[in-house]
Each structure stands twice: as structure tokens, then as C-alpha cells.
Length: 65
Length: 65
DNA sequence: GTGTAATGTAAAGCGAACTTTACGTCAAGG
DNA sequence: CCTTGACGTAAAGTTCGCTTTACATTACAC
Image 1 (spheres, rainbow over the protein chains, first blue to last red):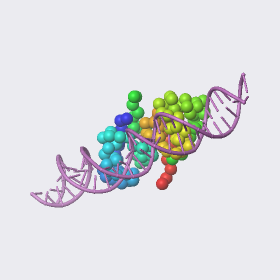
Image 2: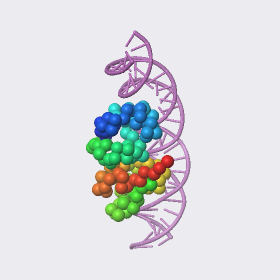
Image 3: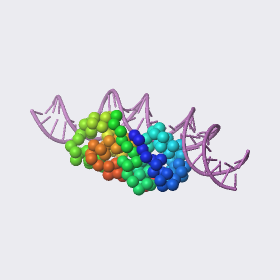
Image 4: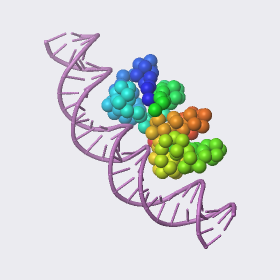
């Protein structure tokens, strides 16, 4: 899974810290997801899509196994 | 989080067993998600959307806290 | 040069997602 | 009847998502 979260976040003028706050998660969580260390949970992914007025599929790219 | 997975699955003529097989997860996982016991991981949710030619947002409904 | 904002790493701990195994129910068909 | 398919529950174990804390780096302001 790749994602364009960092790009989207910057485009909307958020710091990692502020985004974390608004999504109700820790800054570590944002960093780890942006860096591809792990995938967000489904509800978190959906909150992100909602916040940036887009869809889960546009932020996260499903790759083949 | 609510979801219409069971409905979609039946509409496409899959048993829980067969869907699990095609998604590469256990039948327990399908049952638990349909019953709302827990949320799927993001990649699993996206595979489901892909399989049913729809989007994550149409299968899973984000609720407020 | 000292502060402070933004980004990053690391590690320990907790609960959630998922697996495997095993057993129970109920309906339909032979 | 008895089997077989589809659905369900339960419990124990592993891995992953997320938290908290603490510390390092870079860059820009004053």
C-alpha cells in the first residue's frame, strides 16, 4: 500500500502535529503512515478522506501481493 | 462503523466461505466483519470494494464518535 | 547563538485484526 | 433419517495499529 497522505496534508497546509490533533490520533501515527511503516485502520483512513474531501481510494493505493 | 457487506455478498451470489477464499482471509474474518464485531484492515476493505466493483465508502459507513 | 516549530527515530505496552480449531444449528435433498 | 452446505459461536494465539515518552536533526526567527 502506497499513499499520498503527506502530499495531501501539505497541500492543505497542515503540520503532522495539527493533522494528528484534528484526527484524534498521535503524531507518531501520522508519521508512520506517511512513511509507509503501517496502514491506518479503516475508520482512520475514512476520516482522512473525509477531512481532505476525497475518497479512500484516492489516498491509498492497493498493490498486488 | 456499519457496513453492507452481507447484502453485497449475497447480491453477488457468494457464500461467506467462498468470499473468504477469494479474498484470502478466513471465514471467521468475514463473519466477524459482517456481524460488526470488528472492522477490516484497510487493505482488506479495499479488496472487498474492488471485488464488488464499488468503493470503500459505499460498503462501510463511518459514524460519529 | 538561543529558542521554537516541524520532522524523524526508537522502544515498550495495549488492544484490535486475523488465524486456526472445534463444535452447534438449521434447512434442504437423497 | 442422515448428509451436506451455509451460517454462527468460542477460545487461544500471533501480528499489527496506535499510544506515550524521550531524544535527535534541521531550519528559520529573533
